[in-house]
Image (cartoon, rainbow, N blue to C red; front, side, top):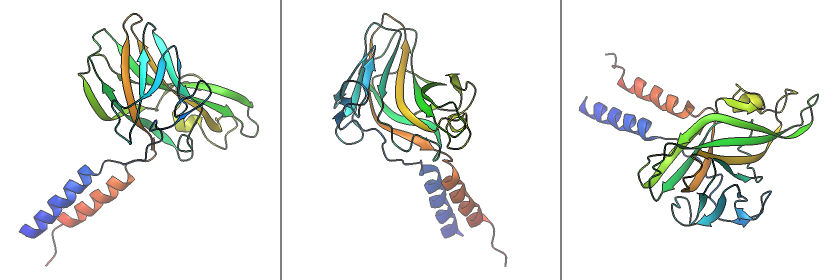
Length: 232
């Protein structure tokens, strides 16, 4: 019985330590044009300065330095879009690592996600670069200096202008005439107090597929089976 309990304890540890592991979609190792001036993985600044750096690198050797001076709403955008940012396979969230070298002491500074896409499905409007900004934001004000791993911005609710109220997976797809066929650009935006600068370092950006819990459910089922008493 003691051995069975030890085995079960080990399996439970596996279940709860088995956080999803996804390959980086952006690791900022290469300087290339991506719709604007050449930058890390094609990212360029809109009201901000985007450069390659080594501070906060958590995947390989480089990170993206995202430097915002005077400005309230700015962006870091690329038109280099991996196949993982689409439906299929479906995306529920954006996961990333972020580093702060000092605390942002003003009242608010939030980072969010905007995805652009083309509506090219049969019977659709045939429009390009439709903008989808998502409600989920990552609050940065007050964060202590350091590196924060596996941070998440949810893509569950669009605030428009395209298809407000819908999820990423409802908006993107290859069949419905009003769905966006393919993602054409990805952007991290920062919304903050206008006069207070902020600098962050981002790395290891991953698009979280749907569903993410199937593997954990399977493991949990195994554990439940293991602790069921044996009939004699």
